[in-house]
Image (cartoon, rainbow over all chains, first blue to last red; front, side, top):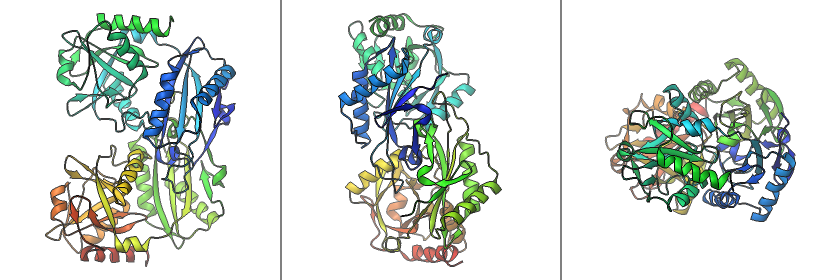
Length: 275
Length: 275
């Protein structure tokens, strides 16, 4: 495969030439934030929302962004032209910078990278199984690079025959490591966790689409809600809306997507892929 | 200042030439572990214990270490000779490796680095103030590079006039972001949290030294224990035993080190600096 280009602190270079000094706080303290969106047939999807969130995450984690919105968009555009990769995931990563004391935030390094993505239509149709996992992400609103728990949890999920985990703490269901979680309640309402989860862009779009069709409740989601629910699904940039067929030990929804999930999939499809 | 050498995947190079590719899991997911010990007058302190813990952390986080104990020690020795830095901190860092999918652990990168440290005798004498902070480190036994909370919490501590935070969750006091925490109870016992905290090497040495002198209890530490305590201190490789003069909002111990703390400082001093 051809090596893609990246933009490293404003300069377009091949990815294998982009290297970070070992004193960066990302390397020594896992300190950084990122955002991630996709391009479909060469068109960036929801890029304005992702840039909004990128600045928001940076602010929450005290990382200065020394680029204007316009500069960021110009760099993304330059990268997309150089790579000529129509269906891709694009990541904007901002690190804590080179720190002489190994703890204090300095001038961040900015890396914009792009990789091809292939949509997993089969899983979007057939759904996935989730394993409940006792955890709650700190700084849940910032899209930090901290995925230690997510990586460890995935291993546990696979061992138990699940595709991934769903974080649960004190009886409340929050989110998956890399996706938001939704339920269709017994009364047919769409439920999803409030502000103490990652504010997913796909989540936001789903809520906008859904509220014209059904009642939406954004609030704490309990295990009781799960047990009483008719349908469940997760959402993310790469997974779009993917049905949840079971939450191990709590609920078996049966194969494939439920009716409401299917309808939301169609609406999201139109918004992203047929627009 | 002269640029120190590091050992990067077995090769001695100047630190500013040691660079990590941007697809390493440390950069994209904050995934890695490390260990840290000091040299005093050219002699590495407790190196065997630190290497034990390094392998233990790596195992807990599923990172393969492709170097034997002997190889690690040879590299550390080579580094110390090259840098000629008698009083230093030495860090062994192991990353998640270059991951093509940005999530799966691969062949880790190993970086051994060394920086001068100056002992802060004034603070070891006068003590510090801690701010209680609601948190508990996940994977507390692994010395992971994940310090997002520690860096954020330090900012909050400084704003409140404290030197650092002490993590408290569900009424239990666990540890500081970079140090273990001890109390001297009203009955004169030494108390410290059990296995759900970082297993500090200095902590271990203090427990060994103390148990010949006073009763030691290794168990959950409550806010009630704090309120009733006579003395408190923290321990780490760089801070040795540093007295805690106050935990804001809960307890004021008054300036300097208490009698038991002072005695333990002397014992540790003999073990580390006068041996």
